[in-house]
Length: 467
Image (cartoon, rainbow, N blue to C red):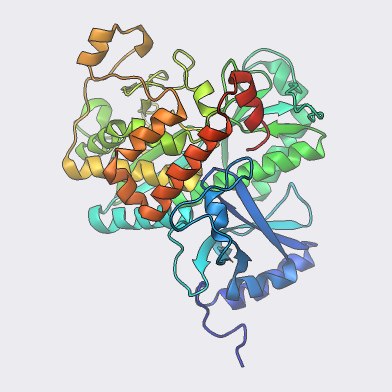
């Protein structure tokens, strides 16, 4: 007779005993259910939940979930590849107990990210979390390099939408204004308290530029934990706002015109505890490995947008002169360049120096986005790539001839263009593997087809409340 203590195909040794103890502790604190969370190819956070008493069973045998979600679109339509999108088969969701937290914004619930495992106990080739973990592990094994990452969270706060789904900002006041901070004061304080109780270290929280917009930055961590944290923070923001009678949108564009919501990625490479982005003899203190890493990301930036900006609505945000970083250019603290080299304040650079990747929004699956950015950077590191001349100011002001001479080009202006860049980038697709790469292409094409014929306002409306 098989028991919960027997070896399991997807879990780790000791997880069942640990989950048994955790479930008792959580139940004693009034936690009734566990949210098992992952993000699909379209960037939608999907969940299943189990009663707290079933946590040990989930750790032993996983929880069933169809692989069809790898090819779901944001509107819940389904596309197919040669191996994904059918009604056949099953996967098991295994909670990562190291990252299980009690949800302070949702009393009675806890949350855990999951790894998706086949019924035979193999890693599912379409699991973004597995892809990111593998990429990070290979970087350490092959190059002795580790990473620290953080994803900025921008969102719009609104009155609950009516039947028409319209966006009505819940606060007034100018960009970065004290008025807006005061208006959302109670909700914001509850949010900060909830995140603190969940062990999320917040660096900054402030009103942002667009109507009803706020931004929250968290401390850097290893890439898998950073992606997990991005999902958890958004779950918490949404829950706390709901308890205050508010709605939130993380969509890249809540309206057809104007500044949208980004999800900028901050990323730094380290070796033996030393930040490779500081203390070196290359430009702005970069060490050779850091420069080559940044150059690798820069060289693949057009193809990367198919992963980092995966929604048609994202291209309403990617417009020049709006600090969205829509050019293949880099510069120190230059917020109009696709890549911003952050040196940090003198005296703190060994810790703070990093690379900010700007053409990223929160429609992106954070595991795929971080994994692809790291893979692109490692390709540059392996080839010893060098950065071109840096830019200052707004690249949109460069004439066509000067831009061409400096290698500055506009990033894709549509998801269709991004997909074509991605199709042509063999190394990036190889890093993902054929199952994930084909899913990216199929889902992106499905999103393109879903909004065919819509104007900008209609595209924004179609995705406004999806993320």
